[in-house]
Length: 187
Image 1 (cartoon, rainbow, N blue to C red):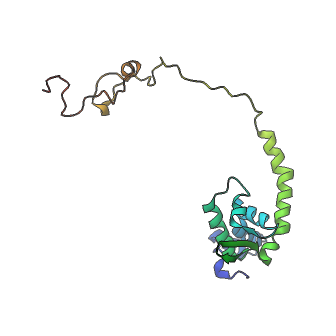
Image 2: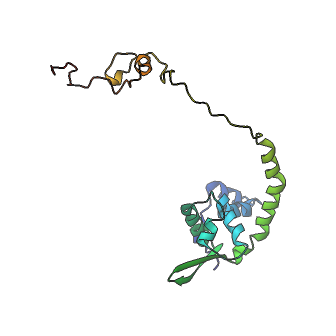
């Protein structure tokens, strides 16, 4: 299945201007519009190993969720990179594989992986902090949560927040409600 011009994303005005000027970046921008997100290229890279079911692709990366995978596969299918084949209806089994266009992305995907292993991964490991033992710091129970001594105007009280919280009471919970008297006789 070869992609039709209508199945690909329309170029942005900036991309059109570059292509009209005869710039050599036009094919690069067109390719990036097809494989321009991390998940698109990652899925193509996994499918280079052969056809895979949805669940196999989903479990290939713990950060990938079903919604993102589904949307990405639909985009790649519409772009002509991936082909969806229904193997059986009971149970419903669908297999995704690369088209000729997708298979031809293989060398580019492998080169990007090599480039990343050489330049990005080592730099990432250098910038990571060295692991240290973490220590849990728990607040002292006698320290008030609110340190401001201003009143809470929305709670209908004029008592300072610090004194209410230090006394173990919530300023909002202990605020008088409208129309409710605090006297024991109700009035």
